[in-house]
Image (cartoon, rainbow, N blue to C red; front, side, top):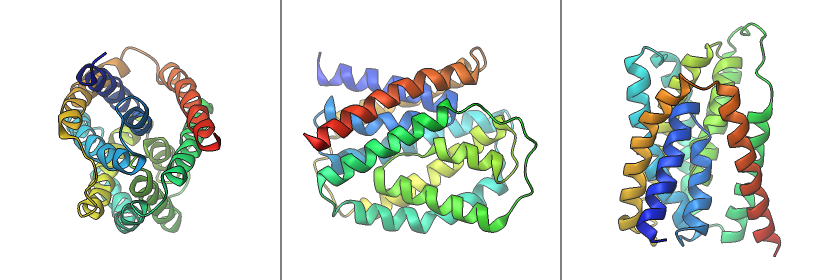
Length: 247
């Protein structure tokens, strides 16, 4: 199968997951770029930020049209992550490939376990500013360091810490992901690397189209079914990357 076809298929799948779940799909971008498309870990995380930023911004527009974005809350949450995302993005380019791969396998496993957790039915907690800032900063650091959107962390935090309803949390998480991805990408612009735009461009285009379909898919299939299926895929990816580090 040609590189172009692989990029289009992978982009569509990742966009589908991002549009439907508000996050989680971007976790697959880095391993896809490394194992299927031949990117180095450092270049894959940078390319992933480009893909995630463009796709999240597109999905954000779709959710905003339906009124599912809490702009003020999301802006404050995202602001807390801008500096950590920038600093982590700058630091990631100086780390060995095995360290990035190992860290990514851990994050993929954590994302899968988070998705397999049953959704809590408890009422929203009182908003705690310090906790919200801490969650936003942590998400920014993960985004900058590993090139993932971190929606699997953002959505639960927006529900549990800031008291948003699930649909609002999914839409608002896309705002946070977009801002953090752009901040981290700014820190990496000077690093360069073997960014292959002939792969990144079609990958991103397919992901954007997939995000629109993902939003429609979310209205037809329960969120729990989507999350469980995706969690299984993430666990497999995490295991493969962990073995790669050890071997």
